[in-house]
Length: 300
Image (cartoon, rainbow, N blue to C red; front, side, top):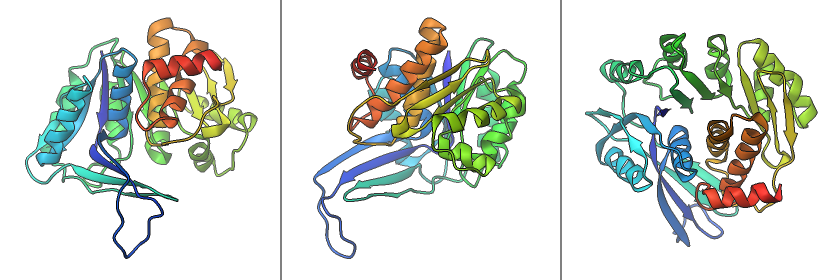
């Protein structure tokens, strides 16, 4: 079974306002409401690609209930810990001449709620796959990623991690199955500017030396790089298409890669699947679907 964890899920209110101006009334030309959060995105795309998962995390209030309802609408199972006070956050994603985001805070997560999440994770079994991704609210311990991975260490559970800076670096000692920084995040870890695929490779290997098993580096329009635990180095330019919405593209890449590995066990196939799934989401108003991904695979 596949599980995803989203510590601070949201309702994403996505709007488009032509030539937005501050200080005056602006009217939308497009609007949509979607359940948001990196782990949630992974679960939705996995479902779109034909694979079941259960979304874990925390929810609160009417917005939390709506997140669960909208996930169910996508056919995704959820098992969130309900927080009694506050509400799950609403994030505004406004698209105009420039993209602007206003992200909410989310509820205060209590120690009791954290223990309830641990209990759900303790029920995972050998052979299960866990995806932990995204930022953490300030009411969670800074080392929550480490605590989870230490708790599950040695139990035969493959863990994929998509996080930045210390959240990522501090879990490498637990040998995550997959990590997926982008080239900018990778450069921030080592204090370098990484613009080309060849520049990325030595630093991806450094992450492996620190403990990561498989390293997938997304590079937006410049494609992607993959360094496997067997030493394979795979590179590819990005599929051709028009960028419509960058939100969720990295999460989609994770879902696509995992789908490829589940279905074939082949790194090359998984890498291509991940690349095309991320691109399919970037080229669409919504998250990638299987037909969109297969169309890009055929053209890659």
